[in-house]
Length: 164
Image (cartoon, rainbow, N blue to C red; front, side):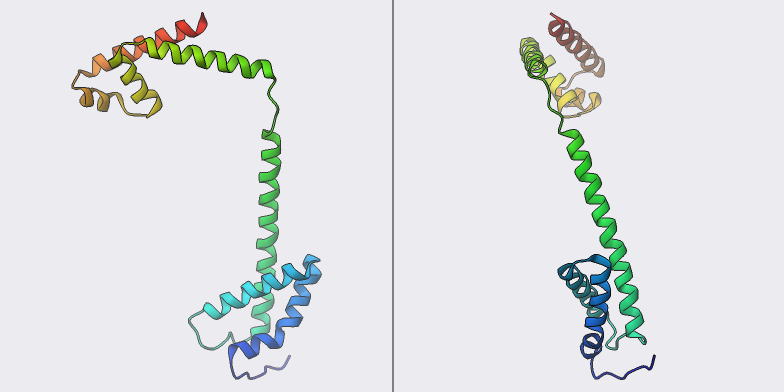
């Protein structure tokens, strides 16, 4: 095909717009999506630092269109996988299990509230906030062995109370 000289990049792009949009529409089956993809290609091309369009603008536009189609289909596939995962996660839990879980949680809260203040604070800092035992010891000005002992006591107490 014969190369054509253009006055500006936008004139060159407009020359091939309908041809490339038709290609995209045939591949996608949707005029609006084809126009959107072509517009994104044009915006990308115009953002380039070069004032002149690529030497073979038609080939460039078709290659960019093929790449856009691949990305578009890849995005559709990802969205479909995410949707199918969320649908699979949307499992109804029997009311009895919900009630048992709430009761167990209430027992755990009660057990934690019955712990001595320092033990309760250590347990919450470590298990809820993820603070290291060493940092907890420094924070309260106690030995690391004290923190370890209090955590062990707290966990044992909570486990015992939740079983009864």
